[in-house]
Image 1 (spheres, one colour):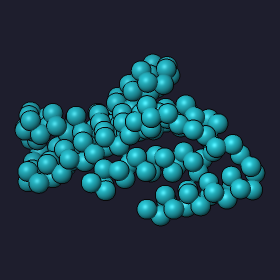
Image 2 (cartoon, rainbow, N blue to C red):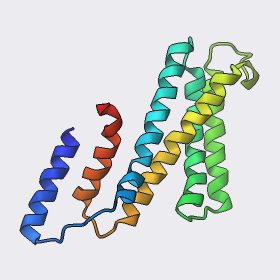
Image 3 (tube, helix red, strand yellow):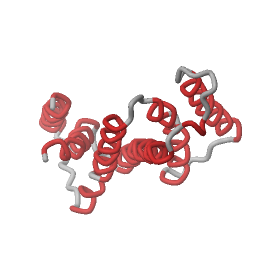
Length: 167
């Protein structure tokens, strides 16, 4: 709420002092800005389900590192970026090393990936995918409206994100 208030006051101050033209958004653009909010609300629901049903959070922690790889994939598809082979290798190495450390710290020395429950593991991967894709959507929205000042962008994105919290 504080971020929204600061962005609103900054936007009002900037439009009055610099006489910037008001930017009109179409209804489809406003709905487009709510896509990351819907993805994050869905991911938060999955996260809540995983936290309440699992005895330990190993699955969430282990598969949470996949968010890095998913951000790389989503950046290629949604933003049109291309990553080099070294960048892909470092992302995958980082993800697998974090996952192996998390599984190794489970307590048993014989813990392995096959010891994890299947359905919560799939939900954790899906959760990571939603979180990573939502972040890339935010970036795409910010780059799409370059004529909009930062305060205006923050106001719209914060409003769309907290739209799920208000219901």
